[in-house]
Length: 121
Image 1 (cartoon, one colour):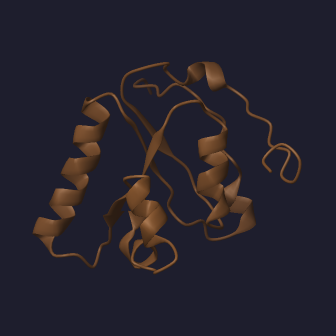
Image 2 (cartoon, rainbow, N blue to C red):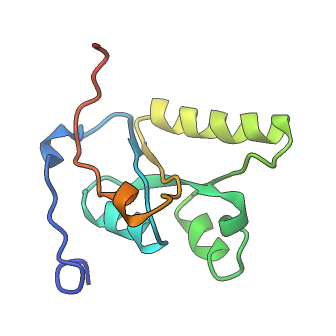
Image 3 (cartoon, rainbow, N blue to C red):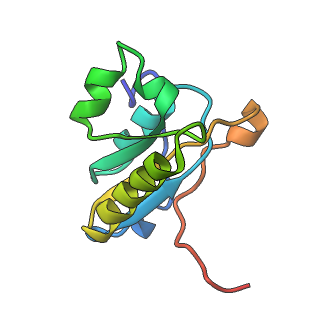
């Protein structure tokens, strides 16, 4: 489906480490964007999902299989810290995690190129 219907083109895949922790952060417009991100890499990704979406009956079974991490600003501080700690521990364990904040418009949801993070100015 990703090759025929969406015809995605991956640029910068060489910036994704073959092993070790990685964090993908990009805007998205629909639920399909996470699947397209997963299809663009050979790495298994643990998604950080808004709890309201995670709890939907038709999403939750798949989210649990994918070991998604539910999070929401509406959570109590202790639950929020637990979700953030789980994501941090996954990255430290060498897994890759993805956070897909909701884009406000198509213009702001341009698919990001994979690039190495820089710590410079």
